Image (cartoon, rainbow, N blue to C red):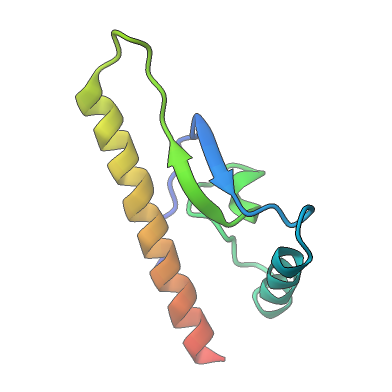
Length: 93
C-alpha cells in the first residue's frame, strides 16, 4: 500500500528524463511495466509522474520550525512508503 499525500511541495529535486538517456530509459521501462502507477507519493498532476530525490519546504524567518519539520517528515515517510510499494510491485514481476 502506498500513502499518497495531497500537499504540494515548495521545491522538489527530481530525476529529469529529458536530460539523461539512462534516466529516460528507467522512466520508460517503469511506465511500460506499471502504466497506471504514479512514481511519486505526492498527488500533484506533474509531480506524481517524476521520481523524487528530495523535497524542500521553505519558510520565512518567522515561520514555525516545528511545522516545517512535521511537513518534511510527512513527505519523507510518504516517499519511503512509495519506495516500499514500488519494490513490492517489482517483486511481483
